[in-house]
Amino acid sequence: MKNAVSPKTSAELDRKIEELEKQGDWRGKTLAHVRTVIHEADPEIVEEQKWAKASNPSGVPVFYHEGIVCTLEIYKTAVKLTFAKGASIEDPSHLFNASLDGNARRAIDIQQGDKLNEKAFKELIRSAVALNVDAKPRARKAE
Image (cartoon, rainbow, N blue to C red):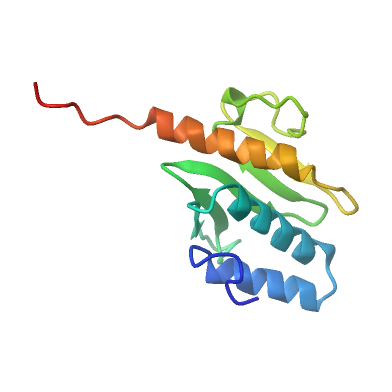
């Protein structure tokens, strides 16, 4: 997959998706789909790899727009989207199904065979972006 989504994508996530898809692993297709929906929801979002360590040398894909919107983690049984400020976001479609007890984060675990409600998911992305944009300090006008 050659940055088909946006020039603001991570080559490392491209590599991971390609590797999983070659293995016939459902997570590759799911990662690619979720990534596409994120970029459709906010074409200005920027994707980076962060927090590389010995146990995960490629790091974690992080989606930014005026701050962290969400992370995309890959587990054996799930693809997890963790929203940094998810507890402050309305979720009328009840997509959040993990990390529900914390004061800040909320997550969506997607397991094999799950179908993502794209419309509701895009609204969560847009709400997270709006929260970040609203939280940025504004420059004061000279009086």
